[in-house]
Image (tube, rainbow, N blue to C red; front, side, top):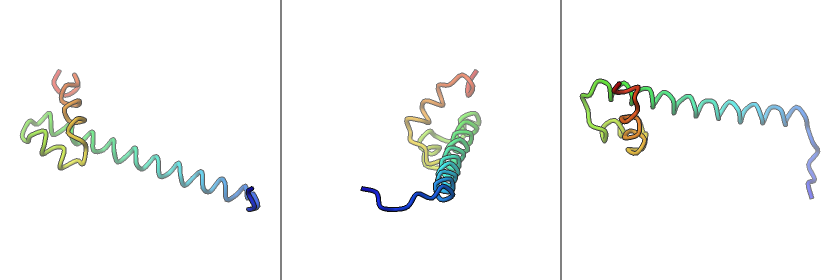
Length: 72
């Protein structure tokens, strides 16, 4: 049984912090995807090097390489 007293302000603060962290993670991932896309367009490094530089899995790099936005 839950013994702690419910605190509305604490609940809101926790939810805001979680939302902020989720947003940061999504933003960081999107930046990595944007960087990988730009490197693919430049065609100066291998997919493995892009994966290592961005921290994205090689499968994601290969997926991005097949996207029409990279090579129209």
